[in-house]
Figure 1 (cartoon, rainbow, N blue to C red):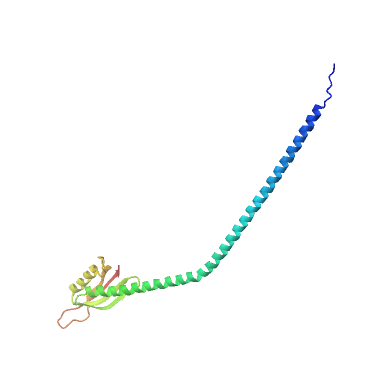
Figure 2 (tube, rainbow, N blue to C red):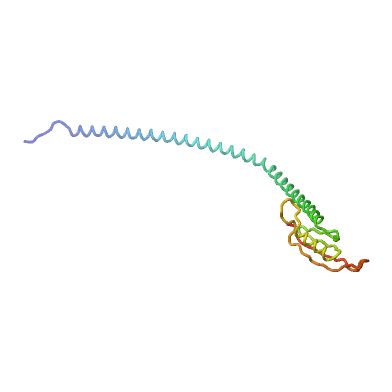
Length: 189
């Protein structure tokens, strides 16, 4: 015999599953909508925060640009003062080297030698022209120049001291002795 089920169980289960499916879809759509709204507000807040940071950084940059404009004259003044100090230092060095040169000459020159001309050039080179009573006094002057120490330290003041010329002077003295003419060149250390 054929059995007939008079209860529509399949239809009831299908409707029940459909209701659960619709409920799950609505719940999923609602959750998605809530996540979208939350993400929108989060990124909007983040965007506003970044905009505030950018405005703050722009304000700081503008302040620094203004301070930099104020620093330009000060930097120019600093450069001018540095140049003045450097020029003053060079003048003091030049003055000191002339004074030390004269001190070295006064320490080393014997009584029998006298200078007619003393030249000091910008590159620290010097030239002495003068006369001496005899060869010995000129050579003593030359050797003393090679070994003179003027400054407080123990280094030699002159370098490359050389006798450029040594010759008898024109004419003779009353005693018959000839004076010697010399040229000595070298450089300061």
